[in-house]
Image 1: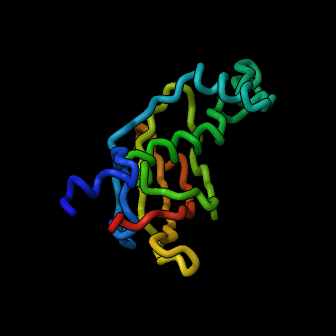
Image 2: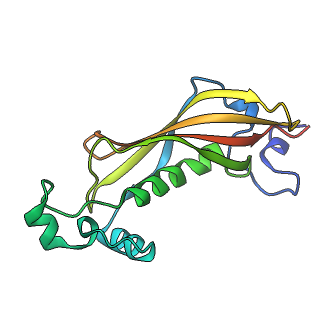
Length: 165
């Protein structure tokens, strides 16, 4: 099989994610995409998910009643964007399922207008004992704002496909 053949799945769709064998422990992937989170992103996501927290929606409250002085970006929006940014270079076309998150931290606040960049490190990888041709990979996704402050750290497990034979 040529290298170009290895970049498609069984149905011929292009694959940009990495196969299980390409995810060695210690691999760090700096993701090409960056994203500026806007007021519209935050208000839309927060209201769509039925979160009435004043901290995300009430500018007066945030300015006068919080230590931040402005609304915070919803942490679940942050988490979703962080994982989403990682997909193209880690799991697009090569994952079976997201198995869950072991830990999620938000060590610094994220505000409207902040731009995040993400990197992913492979913390662990093992072949599946019950699913031949698949393996479990533990990723740590780290997001930094434009000042290089760590704003999100998420450890998650994914069931990944091995390279097609």
